[in-house]
Length: 64
Image 1 (cartoon, one colour):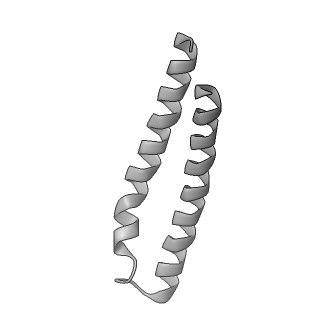
Image 2 (cartoon, helix red, strand yellow):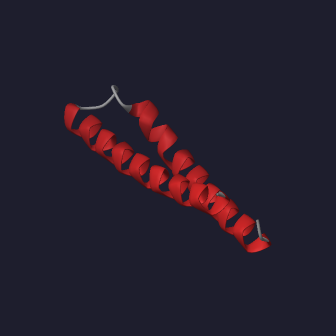
């Protein structure tokens, strides 16, 4: 693996970590709000999960 590939993987994993951190507090709030707010948070978490899966797949493809 080249140094450029390692850097790409590092950047992708950093972005994954940032998404997880950004949404972890929101995830813990579900159940303590109104139904509409809970649904909104669940929708946000689903979107973040999709982004994380795509970023992970990109990192995997680079890693081989």
